[in-house]
Amino acid sequence: MGRHQHEALHPKARPATALELVARSMRGRVPALIQLKDELMAVSPFGYFRGAAPVMAADLAQLPSTGIVSQLCGDAHVRNLGAFASPDGRLVFDINDFDETIRGPFEWDLKRMAASLVLAGRAAGHKDGTARRAAAACVERYATQMRAFARMPQLEVNRFQVHRIDLAKPVHDALSKAERATPQHTLAQLTTPVSARPISARPISSRPDARRRFKELKPMLWRVTGGRAAAVVASLGPYREMLEPQRQHLLDFYRPIDVAFKVVGTGSVGLRDYCIYMEGNGAGDPLFLQIKEEAASAYAPYLPDARPAAHNGRRTAEGQRFMQIQTDPFLGWTHIGSRQYLVRQLNDHKGSIEIADLAGANLKAYAEVCGELLARGHARSGDAQTISGYIGSGDAFAEAIAEFGIVYAGQTVKDWEELMRSGRAKKKA
Image 1 (cartoon, rainbow, N blue to C red):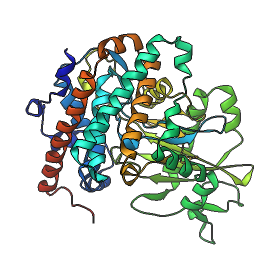
Image 2: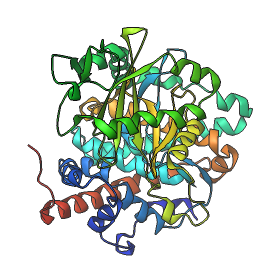
Image 3: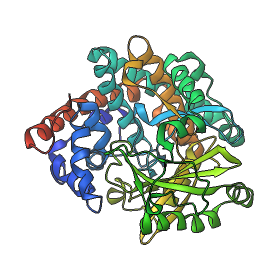
Image 4: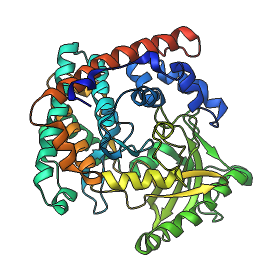
């Protein structure tokens, strides 16, 4: 397809309405949380966009594509990048959400990122002209970096460090948050000292010296006890088996203390998400593991050549390893009954940006970081020479994707307004 064709959008070609597409994606989720997802999506057009990956997947599938395939993040937007601790303890900044990851046309990630930059830019006070220029800067930086990758040995591509991160204030802010987000900080945020209470309410540890348990912070966090807690802890067995021996050895130092259900994000609301609080070398050595249910990627129905994932937790973990230069040492997968789960650390030195961080010159600076990180992820998992050759040396591709970002942001506002009119959600104050 011609580069200029990327600005097109055909919302009337959708296989169903936006409301129906979102409703279909909620099948099999926790019924009591469906209303909460609607409320989170109703907060703003950007909030709606975060929860509407299934809608955009359907929209992108109606358009011509390049057919140039790489590993997709699948939900590439400005708040799905963040800081976290690498296995050696250094803080890194990268794409950090892979629930929708799958192999597909590389431009789908860029189109979703461009739309998110426009929506987030509007929310941060920018006019559309400025937001559009930021989206174009994102794609221009992607193209420049992809051309560089096309000339580099593959081993160098695989370990390439993004130095532009040092120039973006929102990234510095996220790294500062990550530095403070220690396991001890999470311990104070999510748990409370154990007081005298009946045996049935004690943490799951059989040891009488357990001193903390999860807080009750409904509707976002609550304790899980009894048989359900036992099933969650039992899922550590198959999880341990898939870990490398050195990771198994590290995990064996920790024992489970308590279990909670935690609501995370917007798109994931309604999926089963458990946290296990564990202790290693005493109470001062906490480890929090997140066991997060994974459904099929929203893009899977629209990619006829994609084989159904045998395990969606594994699909997510392996997609993350394809695209990230450093990954969580506890990243893995497991199952509870017939449901499939991703396993990773919860909040260990993690930090993300806020929309307010994108005011002024920060939007363009951050957009360029987004472009470079997407380029690295796609080059690690695809063919940099083919992608670079398609994009070419001019700015036609970047301008078309930026225009698509404006058009899709406008469609997102219409879809958000439809949600507001439907009565399914109320806008939070």
